[in-house]
Image 1 (cartoon, one colour):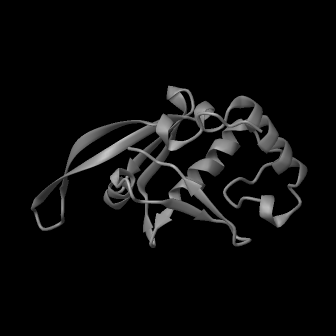
Image 2: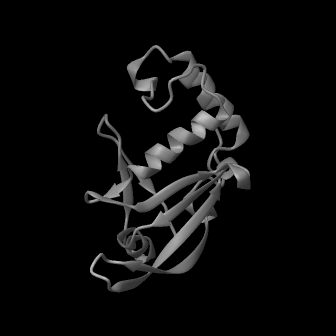
Image 3: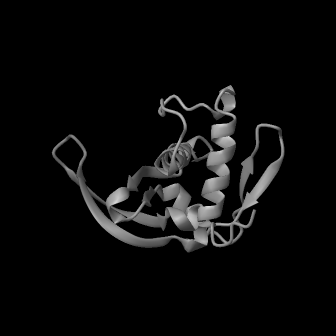
Length: 146
């Protein structure tokens, strides 16, 4: 199935200056990069239908059941919820890549991600390689630019 445009290069991002109280009364200023991706770019419509057919057709299998989604069959909104949860779990050396992952339905199903400092640095490093290790041991290289 063709998934053209479904990589991190399609994200729109902006740097935001944030001030946060560290608990001691001192205010800490830092910069976060907030990324937004339209879920239709991440999952083109035909791919959404395909994924829903596969997940719903195998809902009796443990691998296709999600404790945070209790109803069946799953719909498009549930698919985006799965993506939200999976993005929350992406890590680089046991550190989350995203401080926050939100599904913004009012903006037309947009996933908004606040990048962790380490993830930003890794994406800006031209020599960095991001790879996904599948449970079966195969490795997939992922291109990311921020």
